[in-house]
Length: 215
Image 1: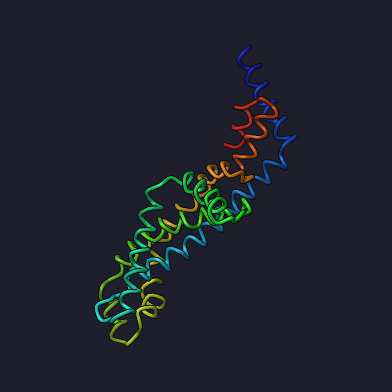
Image 2: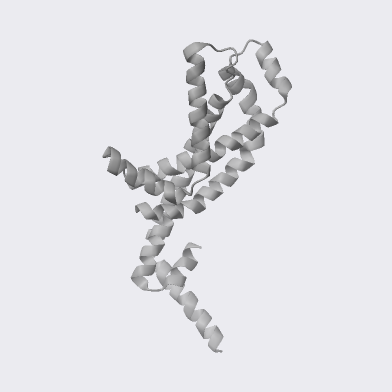
């Protein structure tokens, strides 16, 4: 029937595009996964650092040390709120083109992509880590304090290992989100999967078929 012919024709077109441009699609996929995994890993490290600083008690600190800790805590809070409240596509434009315009730093697009995903992910995971830390029983903090551990030691050896169990699913979710959100990085000419597909669609004029493959 006519519908069967149309269906066969569509998949034949999809197969033809794949045969011709498969290396490009695979390269785009590889870059997408690279950015996603590196961005999530570095974002997790940033989130840990930010949240550990934000949990440092300042009650018994004195003078300049207390002031510096409070300053870093305020900066950390501002960072988290700003990056969680703005779209990654806007952050990409500001960081990539802003660094070039105001600081004369001409970043490699791939490096810029990893940086953007990392700082964006760090803001979200800082809040995730905060939830994980809050889920740890208060007695664990008291026991660690009674053993004479410093704040950093309490976090590293007692609190964070327990918090990790609570936040692991969220880290997995963030990785999945990053794999999808890398598509916005085509605005700074990162040759990830969406950028490649846009180029293929423009070359073949078979837009739906090309995006069917990428989907």
